[in-house]
Image 1 (spheres, one colour):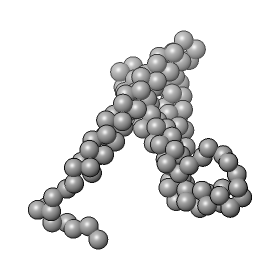
Image 2 (tube, helix red, strand yellow):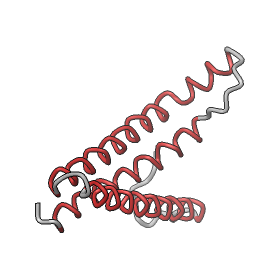
Image 3 (tube, one colour):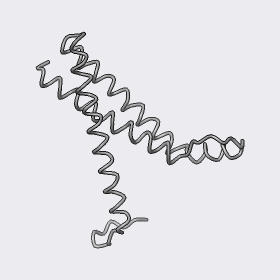
Image 4 (cartoon, rainbow, N blue to C red):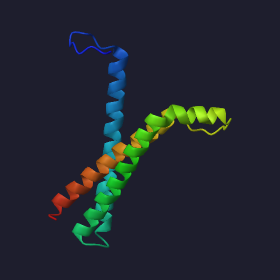
Length: 126
């Protein structure tokens, strides 16, 4: 069981892994924010500002929700799916680690998208 004592040193590998995850999350949030802003502005050609930003927000929420649900499924059932794959002798390229990484990307991209769509809505005054 991990200690809650702050005097216990944290390993360098854990710090490095955390740093890499934070950098990756920030990169995908930025990409999602760019997508959210671009889609919000592109939809202005067709719809009113409110409809455009609402639609962009809804699309971003869809990506975020799918990413979070699929990530939790990959974490919860990943070893079971890999075991079943081995038992059935199926040579698909699916792995728990690759699924977690893919849904990490979707989740953080959706987060940036939603935040950018909301920011566009505020900036457009709707």
